[in-house]
Image (tube, rainbow, N blue to C red):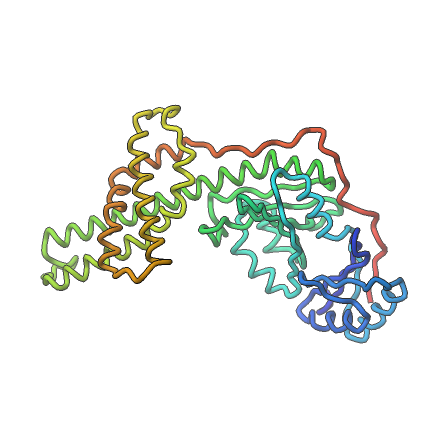
Length: 368
């Protein structure tokens, strides 16, 4: 493969569009600029309104001078396909095009994709110079939408790790990306009926797991701290002075507070989904209420720390500990409720949704 390539495709609104790719992609940028193409905010190059076929021919000649090959895609512009899909999904979605001109940019993307299926594998083994993102403006879900490597028609869709649970690579809770057909209506039904419910269940499981891990870590440190207090010694049996015990206590409380912020971030959504009355443990309702109140108290403290005046660490730790202690005491009740509380499904799309094609006629291949 050439060190610099220009990939041409057709956009419904913009006509011919171009994307630069390769380790020497600046060569492609130069050829495009010299040929009259203009780059938009997403990094996609467009012909000016008065551009014509002669401009494309000139581009091929100019690109050759800059050691850049020119190819035409067998698909329509990825941005158009993403917008057509977004319009058919339930809710409000925004779209954007992402360009990974240098292979390293694609490699940088890998840790942030939350996927246990084909998309995650493709990002590691196939060259994907561009993609589109679809973002749910209400839920915050961000999907990655790409041409399926090695296929002429299909697409792949997966997701970025949810906010607060970044770097999802290798996560056992990650959802599996799915293959989408080349029709917006059918693709939207697949996303709404299959992928998004699976994604939301995976988010629920990951949040629950994150809280369980945090509570387990605080429990372990609490046991260690209690053993030090009871023995008056460090873990290596060295005598523990009063000053050292005070410092160790503050360190434990400080670590506990920082870890507990994961609970503050994720517990409210999970508690809202819990329905103890319809669970095997209906008497858990009162405990869940106490846990919710404890999170509210911690949220109030966090807001003061972030937006109010300075809060000394000792004061912060003293105020935070009752909430943390409540969760250490009753956290298992929350976890068993969360594990049996399925996320709410989004509304399914009607079967009659129009099947709008995502693909266009294949243009001829140019290689120079």
